[in-house]
Image (cartoon, rainbow over all chains, first blue to last red):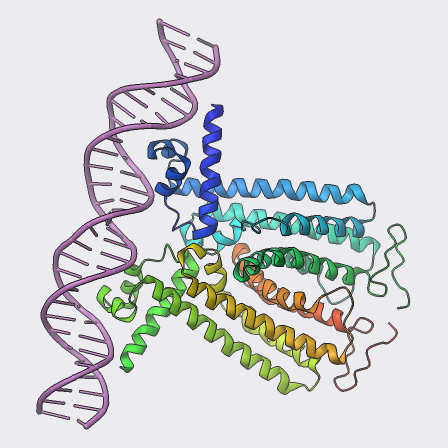
Amino acid sequence: MRKGAETRERILEIAEASVLAKGFGATSIEEVIAEAGITKSGFFYHFKDKNELARALMLRYVEENDRIFDEVFHRGRQLSDDPLQSFLITLKLLAELMGDLPNGHPGCLIATFTYQERLFDRNVRDIAADAVRSWNGRFRDALNEIATVYPARKGMDLDDVAIMFSCVIDGGIIMSRGLGDPRVLGRQILAFRSVIKMLFAPAAPDIMLPTAPTAIAAE
Amino acid sequence: MRKGAETRERILEIAEASVLAKGFGATSIEEVIAEAGITKSGFFYHFKDKNELARALMLRYVEENDRIFDEVFHRGRQLSDDPLQSFLITLKLLAELMGDLPNGHPGCLIATFTYQERLFDRNVRDIAADAVRSWNGRFRDALNEIATVYPARKGMDLDDVAIMFSCVIDGGIIMSRGLGDPRVLGRQILAFRSVIKMLFAPAAPDIMLPTAPTAIAAE
DNA sequence: AATCAACTGTACCGGCGGTTTGGTTTTCAC
DNA sequence: GTGAAAACCAAACCGCCGGTACAGTTGATT
């Protein structure tokens, strides 16, 4: 009962690493069980087929990411009452979290799955899509909150800015991997942070007053 | 001789579509040849093994993208002498090119490959990395050129901004796919375009004088 | 003592995956 | 139109892979 969950978790961990390194199609159950030190029967005791493994991987990933975002947004709000400031703090925390990993970010399961969509049933795809929508909604809410205090620059749709953050993260992971430089992701998140600063503090980008929403000043 | 190149091209086209839909590992040669209407032997006449197919796909993709960037940057320079203006035009062209595809952007091969790196030898990975570096260099050059005329905002490294564009494209493709909305990519490129506008025209984002590099003005 | 979760072990299957060998047709230069 | 090279076909190979079936074992729980 408890040992079962432990084994299941080990399988998922190994499978996730394999999926992020070779893709789902090239991830063989036989390899996974070899590394996990169990038999094939053991695997099929936990997952009735490979598709259920995919589903479990997706759910696990979404849950874990939700947790991280919960935490990091919460910390941001803890450290400042000003919505802009707290979002900037959140972004910095995320940059540290994702950029300082020893071997770089392990990879985004959503990204892999969207590039192998034909391998999964609609269920899995829906989980992914809902998760992305939820995260984008989170960012958009943060931006809207900021916009009630600071006038946003014209010309940029806040919905697009929210999605752009997801793009920068997923793109940053790809760039980090492709270029073989783990620092890229952290730098990209910080660059996006600068964009947010620009967006909401056009006249005085470096001076920020957490309490007073005075934004228009001479440069 | 000529027919050979034709068949080869057909194989590559089919294989690319499959790779972008299922991943390289899950792309079977049998499927490809079935769709191409040739036999297995025919396939192996053109590619000595699956890895060479990967290499050929990568080379083809890089070449094609180089061509597109050449064209679109050239057009941008044609339509304005001002480096900022021409880059903004280039971005708009790209947004149209990539955002108006009937079924959305087919996908970025580089992205798929970086998420299946364990399947390819160093050769293929190097081709991808070099291509990415080259494209990033292109963007950075454009930004540097702009910066000689317009003072860039402080706080953002132009190298990071250049890479961010790649991130936005790759991330935008993933978001478009994941959310099932082809328009996202185009919107993201336009959003990035707005970022560029903000970055180089802090005081008067909407009024741009192509000839005169006067940037500091009242808001 | 009985029950249940959590496995192991073995044996099997059909299918596909990439690959090879050896032969056949098509194309084109001359 | 012929000969050589290019472009392909046919068939077979072997190993792996996902999946099934089922009987048996272990350890904790009740």
